[in-house]
Image (spheres, rainbow, N blue to C red):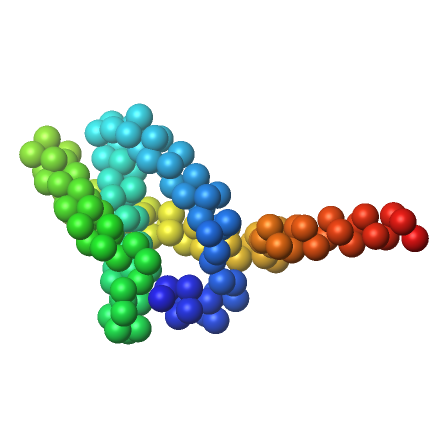
Length: 149
């Protein structure tokens, strides 16, 4: 699993609670890329490039190394790769794709994935740790018992 193989390297284990803010960032990025469109093709193609980076490095490679499916690998392979490929084909058909656009979009897409990891790492470093419902209840109970003393 990506969380098991990457956690020691980045110093944080992604959780389902982390899923929402990091994917929220990607949704905003996607809406922005769509709004810009072919006026800045490298920026617009950065999202599909980032999805390809995510697919390869956070889903397929962990699946291969762990020899068991990583969560999201089937979605990544069945949806992300074809959709990302289609966007590059569409850019080529609309004559907005060249080598520079491809290289820049891949760099920007990889940078977006680095930003997602940075959100996880910096969140931990600044004390924005996950609070599971169990721990939240325990903290509330501690607060209530502390108030009684």
